Length: 297
Image 1 (cartoon, rainbow, N blue to C red):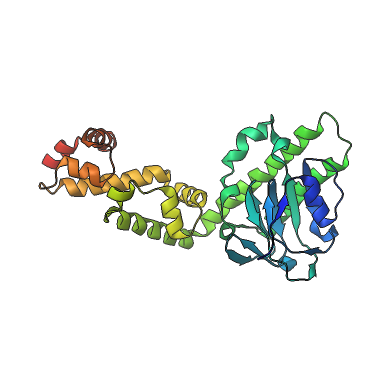
Image 2 (image 1 turned 180 degrees about the horizontal axis):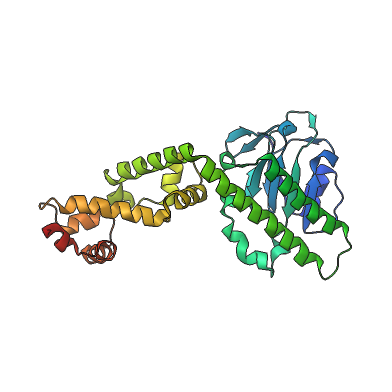
């Protein structure tokens, strides 16, 4: 396995591609202008946004290898590893790359919003696939940022660059919304498998030994990232994943309440409530009835 190359600074990222550093905290690279490179897995301690071209090769993310088409976008947050193993050959990069150090957004409006762009925590198989028009929009945003980098640094530089980065990220959020909507059949399949995962969990002894099913547990079972599953569920059902899991627990509680031989303590234990009083309070909040009232209906 190849050694992982650390990318801690914008200068290091530019050096890898043979590009000039115009700003110490941010860079935009039209990869056609970069030098040929040896592939290597890289640990990014920067934010990185990659729009790949079809001739850029496969990329390795975690233990999986992915082959991308033109206009595919990937988003990396500090601490993530991405890249291909060195095959001993030089390769001409393709596409566009935007990388910026977390210090760039410090004390800017973008600092308050960047955690809301959940696609920075998506897995590589959840990449954003752009239409040709969307691709042109992203390239236009990249060019605007690069134009600002070519301007001498002054008191406006930071705000103009971060505002344009936010504009690019807002477009990506819109395009992800479009992708969720246009993949309805895939989404319905994921939701069906998610529903089955919850049913299997709650029908087993896992609630007693492991507690409430977590978002991460469900995402792992579906081979998705937790953020992607949460965003998909919210867009398809209108509720958060934690609300959905709670609704499922209450649905199971209703079934158990119809069996008079199952007491409140057993229901509370099997569905991971702290105690019968907690179960009763949650049940009433969600149904308008106490468990006893529901049982006696």
